[in-house]
Every structure is written in C-alpha cells, then in structure tokens.
Image (cartoon, rainbow, N blue to C red; front, top):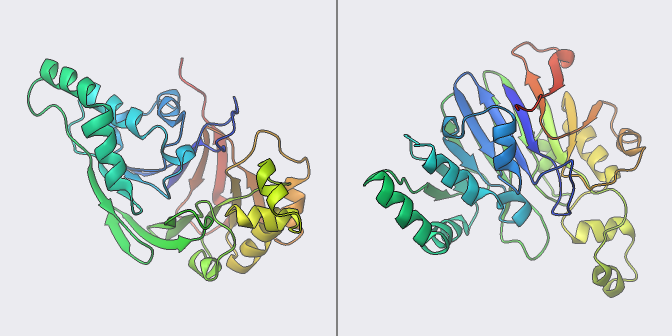
Amino acid sequence: MKVTFLGTGLPSPNPDRCGQGILICHENHKILFDCGPGVNRQIIESGLEHNSINHLFFTHLHWDHFGDYDSFVQTGFITDRERTLEVYGPLGIEEVTDLLFNKVYYRDLVYRTNMRGPGAWKSPVVKEIFGGIEIQIGPFQIKTFRVHHGEFVDFSLAFRIECEGKSVVISSDTAPVLGFSQFARNCDLLIHEVFPGKPSPRLLRENNPDLTAEELVNKMGHCSPRQVGQIAQEAQPKMLMLNHLPPVLPNDLIEQVKAYFNGDVMIAKDLMEIDVHMDSKIDSLQSQTVTPTK
C-alpha cells in the first residue's frame, strides 16, 4: 500500500498545509479519505488523475474534512469521469450531497450537462455508514470504529484499512475513546490527530476557567500529545504518524509523544508518501515527499 498525505492541516489558514485528505493506493485501486480545502489542487500537484479515484470516504462532516468535496466531484465531471464515484460517510453525507449537487450547483450543472449531453453527469452514489461495519473494496478490507469528536458532532469515524496482510489506521478527529487502541492494535501505520498546546477559541477558555489545557483539548474532541503517546503505546503500531496539525508546532512535539510511546514517530507533511511494503519489517515504512508537477 502507498499512503499519500494530500492535506494535513486544520481549518486555520496555513500556506504549508491543506485541509484533511489521505489517499491510499494499491496497484490500480485508489481510495481517498476526506477531501478538505485544497485537496483537489493537491491531487493535481501530485500528478494523479481525478477519475482514477473512484471511492471517497469521509470521517466526519467538518469543513476541513469535506470542503473540497464539490470541487473534486465537478473536476471529475469536466474531465469526463467514466465510473460513478462511490461516497461513504457518516450520518448527513446524503443531505450534504443533495444540497451541493441538486441545489447549490444546480444551474452550473444544467449548463455543463447540456453542453456535454445526456448521461455525462454522474451523481455520486452515497451510502451512510456507522461504526462497526466492514466494507470490501477491491483488495481493501475497510473497518470502521466510532470515535468521539465532541458533543456537537453526530458521528466521527475512524478507519482501519487492511490489504494483503498490512494495515493502516486513520483516527479521524477524536478525544480519547475506549476501545480505539484495540481497534488500531498492531497496525503497520497509525495516522493519529494531535492537538498540541492550548485551544485558541477565547470563549471556550473563558467559559471553562477551571479546565486544564488538556481538558479543553478533550472538550473540543481532540487528543493532547501525551494522550496520543499513551494510545499508541497501547496499540503498538509499527509507525505513528502525527496528523491534523496547526500552523505552528512545538519544537519538541515528537519528544512529547515519545515520552509515552516507545515506537517510531513522524510528523505528516502535505504531499508526503509512505510505502507500506508487503514484508514485516518495521523499517519497511519508507517516506518521501512528492515533487509537485509544474
């Protein structure tokens, strides 16, 4: 399996990190997990063809995770997508899809469909999914686990992607949740969100003066570096990749995590690639940065 980080950031503006997007490929099979702001452009930068990606999964319906959904779909339309895009996501993704393509972009799609002819527009086929189900797509076995991203989120899903004996786990945005370490147990690559430091929303801090910085992070539905280290220590992945990152990172972020996790830790970057080879060596996870196409 090859993992490409198309976006590794937060909603906060950051010239170095787009919204969330992780592409997992094996042979000719490609699955995109989340499609946040800027990810559509990153697909172009990485030299990929939009219409080679026929499956899209959403962890949850926050802007930094689905802000380029419309751009991705319509880019496929104007480049003559042949296969219908299959979309999987939590409760609400059907409504979002209907609003975008039957209402928000209705006039645009009428114009382009009339130019291209009947049958050119292929509306995404959408399926709402919940924690605990498994989906087989080509060589990929995809398992889901419901995580906790704060009290105002209906559902946030973690994914475990297994292929030919190797596994990648994507945590989604989440505070510590019972059972997740077992879900991620012994995976080859654990991609986990982390929120270093104190949350920025002023009202959150003012309305909760008695909470520590870590408790405020959890209230937002995120994990502190300490908690990510503890989760990884229980899960024992071969590699831990820190993701969903703010514009400014503490210089000792890896050290903060490794104080609680005795394994290998890396910080994700946009257009970074990770190869998860078919052998069993820990050092078989090799990373490189994609050179953008010009």
